[in-house]
Image (tube, rainbow, N blue to C red; front, side):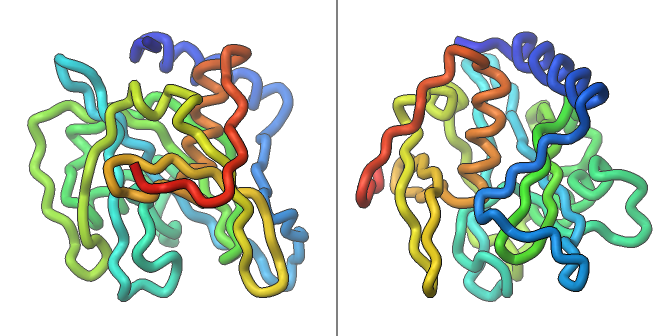
Length: 216
């Protein structure tokens, strides 16, 4: 089992690598860097909840009312506001607005790679440790549900699958991490897969290609 201390050390190493080599941008759709359609800056929090009997990762399920990715599982976060001083501030502000968790309960420990989405967002994922107890008060307009998944499950590469996703006249590979009836996939699964590969390193297990994974 990877410890929280191991995760922090891996993220520090990754930050040091970024400082010397620059940011590694994940672009699964091979989107062109078209300045006429600039990417909108955004940040999310990858929230690891520290429990005595083992950490979990907190997710939200978006409502069907939202313009982008309605009904999908996601990390709390959103687009940057003009007043935000950093991606960390964006991620913490959005987390409080979406699920009601105050930043005093969160200690940020690093970030993973920037992720470009087909909706033209450039997302910086911030990794944060959450110290319970804390209150959860989801915004009913944005969040239909908040749930947690054991970190041990998500850090087991055997639970990472790839499927071929089709939309209009395009298709691309997307990650899937189904858990207990929840479909963790697409952007969120792609970002977590990046986190997994950084944390696990050369022990990472390649994701299995499947046709239509069932919900476990």
